[in-house]
Amino acid sequence: GIRSKREGMKCLDTLIDLSERESRDWLSLTEVTKLANETGIRSKSEVLEMLKLFHELGKLFHFDATDNLSSIIIMKPQWLVDRVAEVIRDKDMHQYDELQQQRIKDNGLYEDYKRLYEEGITTRELLEDLWGHVQVDFLLDLMRETLLLSDYTFGRHKKGDADLYLVPSLLTTSKNLINDDDFECYCIYDFSKVCLPQGVFDRIVCVLIAYSGRFEDSQKPVLSQGKAMLWLGKGSVICLEEGSQKIHLSINKSDNASSSMRVITHTLKKVNQDVMNSKLVWDLYLSTNDENTILYEKAMKKKLKPWFVTGQQKADSAVIQRADLNVFMD
Figure (cartoon, helix red, strand yellow):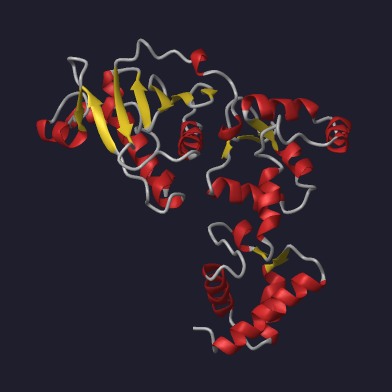
């Protein structure tokens, strides 16, 4: 453990003093380690333990999910809020000022800017510009980990192509552009026992975009506000739509029902655990051949087809044949 609470508090006071004195929003792990060493906290493990404790107490922010995140200690949370708000904003209510807009145009990024607020897709170059070229890798990883942004690999054909990212909360196009009328089966995730908070659907889309992009034969997704059509490998197409306290999943072929439902359920569990502190509660209803729905637990007892399959049909399902979902999700 940390040698003593006194040394830990002394180090914290030093960090806060430095942050205030030099108007520093964040400090590097290298700096913090050096200051900690000077106050008697010698080992790297003790430094990280101290940062974890102060993070939990809300004295600073230190994330450790990736090396980029671990390398920075946030002393002023408003800096994080402001950086994210440079990207995720209502462009009509919170427009960039004339100087910012002119800079974006002068830097040749106006088309990128338009695409971000029309299609929710952006380039690294635009993000670097919006963030003033400061801690871009940290901010990208932060938005990835909080599922506010996803790597968008569709349309990248060769190594030199620009990095693209999807920010689902900025999608503005109409749901009506996506037609799933001829899909063979569906299921409904019903959150009405508690609620379906705003932003959960966008985060599910974030995870699935990254997952879909792992299949070489996935087509480019069709995305709109509250509705998404995605390919999970060759021949497997799903459509997700957010409704009133519900998420509706349509599946193009009944052969893909079991595997598609497992992917979405696994995704939802990941979002619930990673972002929602396991507060989401839902019932799952599966479509039946007579166009009704049945609760998942009852369908499982009945081994209802096409949702519960065994043997070869399961092995042939199009979704999880070439990507291990558990490895990907974890």
